[in-house]
Length: 88
Figure (tube, rainbow, N blue to C red):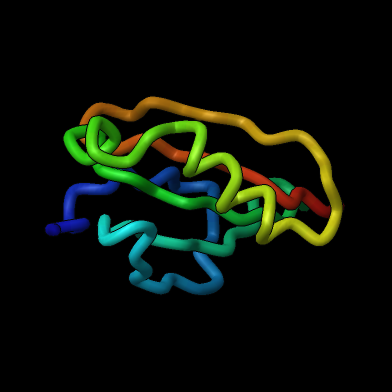
């Protein structure tokens, strides 16, 4: 999967990026900093979400969180961003 077209927000600093597989589907895991908030994202190609059920994806993400805080979802064209583990 090509992740070259992920939209970048100018005011978001990407700390780390890792290519991962969730149930055989390539995704990106990112850690970022935005306006003093540190968080993480799992980025899934929109076309792949049909193969990877959202329920299974949510269980995977919840397993990554050390603090069970809010989980947000943003659809940005070719990619869906699942944002979690926010810290200030």
